Image 1: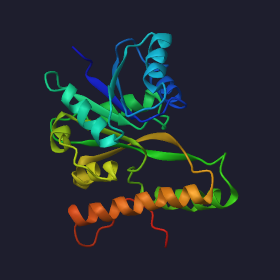
Image 2 (image 1 turned 180 degrees about the vertical axis):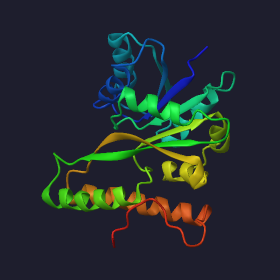
Image 3 (image 1 turned 90 degrees about the vertical axis):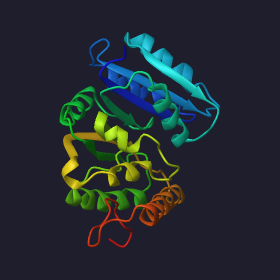
Image 4 (image 1 turned 135 degrees about the horizontal axis):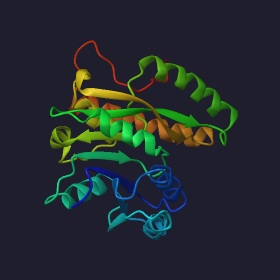
Length: 241
């Protein structure tokens, strides 16, 4: 039977970075402490082989599921289907290009160990060392506003306990899956732990605009399908701010 904490990593052609993220999660973990499932979705590189290789090198079992569709939502659905007969107590979802530590995974699992529905979040830490001047300036302002809101979503890491997972098990087709999940929980059901997840910023203005456009369109979609209560705002930082 799988461990109590299952880490799900959707990965589409992420051979260049999937090893980095897996090593951060597993390098200080005890053997069989986490059940790690990498769902390689429509990859055209050796993402699956890289993930398996890291598990062998570190002495941990890293299960790899390959599906032909290049879709994160399809990957999340495939992971859920794989749990049909053996439901994990805790699911922690980590984007393949995000780096989060063993300690942070442990904190998240402990924070949502509750009979009622809970979602666990960490704060994003954006690495702009490879970015241009304008992009670095943008993220400096973004970081100040994100800290002020302190809501934790948008880090590429989400944790759900068993009751929480039942709310989102169908994974609708949305652009902003993180935002969708967080909207299914009242503020009192959200737990932001004292940990960070390292993200890597866009390098150029063009790449930043494309990334921001996806975020804006994703939030518009969510607002249309799952409106926020009157007087509240989402966790994202608006360009006007």
